[in-house]
Each structure stands twice: as structure tokens, then as C-alpha cells.
Amino acid sequence: MDEADSPAGLPVVIVLAAGRGERFRASGGTSHKLDALLGGKRVLDHVLDAVRASGLQHHLVCADASRPGMGDSIAAGVRATAGAAGWLILPGDLPLVRPATLQAVARALAAYEVVVPVHCGERGHPVGFASGCGSSLRQLAGEQGAARIVKSRAAFLLEVDDAGTVTDIDTTGDLARAAGAFRLS
Image (cartoon, rainbow, N blue to C red; front, side, top):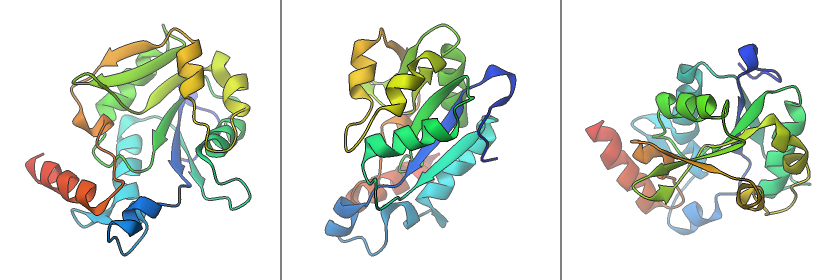
């Protein structure tokens, strides 16, 4: 389901899988963090399964040595899905994010230009952007993420009961904590 356009005016989920994962390796990881196993499945596969279960189309952005930054990855994903009604930017290291949360952010984009999920007071992902943000997103470059765009727009903070929006895997300790939460779910 790697599509440039999403049906029925729904946003496309841009899954970012281009980072180097250096902190994970530095913390003792023996593979890239997205290839690390959580419950017998790769971290990235958990993310992709959640996206598929949400019913939203997605586009996977993988590493490009000539443009390695997060801003470059976001811009590449938005350019590749130029006909989309909007975008949900989802880092590939959030294996516990729930499909219902993806759907909730997508629905909120019908009323707001930027949607940020918030869990227990902490801002998380995916961050949703309406199509009107496309030009700004396509201009991102280097390590510059979309925070500037979020700040410049009236972002809607969407309260969610989903710790997966803030449970990213940057170190082996993060993976161990996620494994504990995974076993409880």
C-alpha cells in the first residue's frame, strides 16, 4: 500500500525510515534500531502493521546518502505523494503507536491545518499536516524537522490515550521498556 495518493481525501502516512540509528548502536545495539526485534518482529514492521491496520495509505522513506537529514526525508516523502490531501509524519521507531491514533489524527486534519497528538502532556507522533502545508514541508532540508512549521501554524493538540505516540526507540534501554509495554498490551 505504498501509494502517492490517498482515497477519499484522506492524508498519506509518511513513514520515516532513513535515520542512521547511531544512538541505538552506541547503547549496545547490534543492528539498526528499525531492524531490532520487539516481540519477534522488527520495530519497523510493527509501525507498518499499525499503518496498514489504520486503513490509511502510506509512503516509506528510506535512507538516501546524498540527503540524510530528517528535513530531507520529510520533503522527499511529501514530494513523492504530492497529490495527497495531507500527511501524517510518523518516525519508523514508534512500534507501539495504535491504528486508532493514526485515524484520529487523520480525522482531525479535516478541521485543523496541523494536528499534534499529546499523551499525558507530552507531544508525540504522528504529526498531521493538511495539504496547505505542502509547500513548507517540501522546502525542509538537512536535520531541520517540521517543528518550525508546527510553531508557525495554529497546531491543534489532540489528546490521545496512546503511549505509543511518545514511545520511540533510540537506545537498547528504550527497546527494553517498549518490550515491557508490548507484553502488557
